[in-house]
Length: 199
Image 1 (cartoon, rainbow, N blue to C red):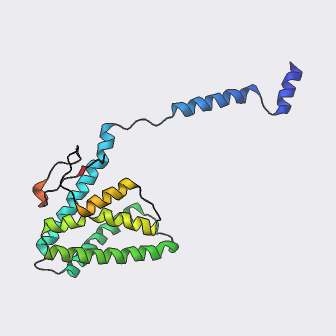
Image 2 (cartoon, rainbow, N blue to C red; image 1 turned 90 degrees about the vertical axis):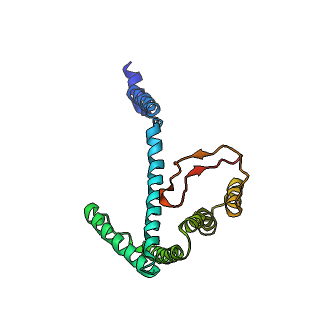
Image 3 (cartoon, rainbow, N blue to C red; image 1 turned 180 degrees about the vertical axis):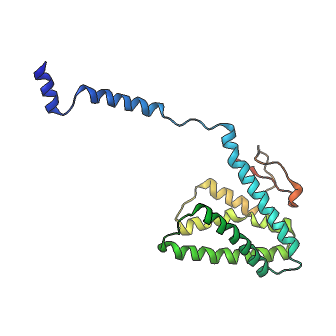
C-alpha cells in the first residue's frame, strides 16, 4: 500500500484531486444561467418605449419653440441644459475621463451630433411633426449602410429585404404583427412600436 501511494505521488496525482475535479464539474453544470422572467424581459422594452415617448416629447417642445427661436439657438439651449445634468452626474459618479487616444473620435462624434441636431431642429420648423418623425425613422437604413462601410459588416438576405421594404414602403403586408407598445396619440405622431416578421 505504501509503495502504491509513493508511485501515485511520483506520477503527480492522488485521489483527492479526482474528487475535486468531479466537484468542479458538477458545480459548473449546476451554475447554468436561469431563464429570465417575463418581467425581466419586459423591462428593457418598457424603457425603450419610454425613451421614444420622451424623445417625441422633446421634439414637440422644440416644434412649439420654433416660432421664437431658430435652429442654432434651440441647439445651443439643448446642449447647455444637457451639460448641467451631465456635470451633476459626473460629479456624483466620478467617472474617469476617456483616454487621450479616443479624443479624436469623441470630437468627431460631437461635430456630427451638432450638425445632426441643427438640421433636425430646422426640419421641425419647416415640416409637420408627423412627417419629420416619419423621416427620422429611416435611421436604421443609414445605420445598416454605415455598418457596411465603416465596420465592414455584411448583412444577410433578410436584412437586405427589410432595408428594401423600408425604403420602398409596402401596404400589402398581411402576416401577424407583434405590437410592443400601444398606440399613443398624445405625442401628436400617432405612432406605435411593432415587429413585422418576414416569412
